[in-house]
Length: 307
Image 1: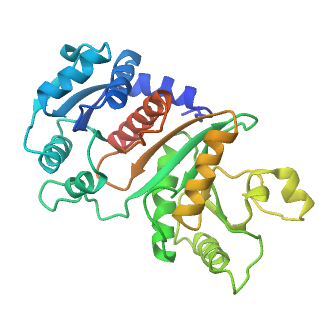
Image 2: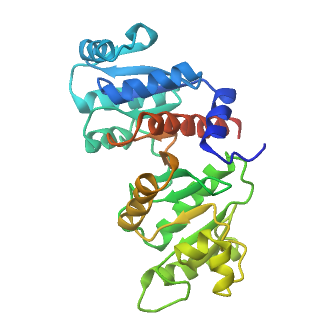
Image 3: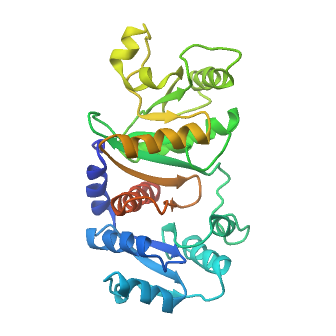
């Protein structure tokens, strides 16, 4: 498979491997409905809309969307009930992707983690941002800036495993993972550098597979070959990173949103590590970002299906 180097490439590939079916929890939300309708028009995905059927139909019509283009599953019992029903559609195989609509995240995740009908896989559940940034010849993956607040060393290793396998679905045979810190040297007073060094060694000894890991690396020498050269860093990853593993949720969230607001870019994001891809977007995300996020989930679902 040819490497997908832009989110536009990803969308085109999603058209090829789709359409998939999305189960949307509490779908009476204008932004979400616009995203799933755009995905339908792109030939990427169809959707089953779960929630109060009257409110879903009304929200659709108010946004010039024909509710007849979707299957609507009426659930008036509240957020928790709608979330669990949406999750069950995925765990039973009627849908391949789960998407959060207008409900509180805790109720949504309660459905995802339900012991009987949920989507637990035994792996760590983590988030990844995908960025197409002007001037770069590849997609940059940032993890985890939205889900796990302060991952410890074993959790960071599992986050790398999640995103490395996800990168494989983009045709990146051996993704390059930069473990980020404030500096590129190990410093006992900076725990992020100690974790980075340990993850690098774990990768070299085969404990982390399917990628090349190096760190600690500062952001500049992770993505700029010129910066790495100036600092005398010799590495297969420095300046060429596909994946940026951040130390904690604050740094990842700030980095990802800095790209969104300060640079010409296209962006998407999904949740990995469950039995199926999960689209969990912010209300502040653009309609394009939501559509790209659905496309990313389709690419990942298709890859997992064919493994």
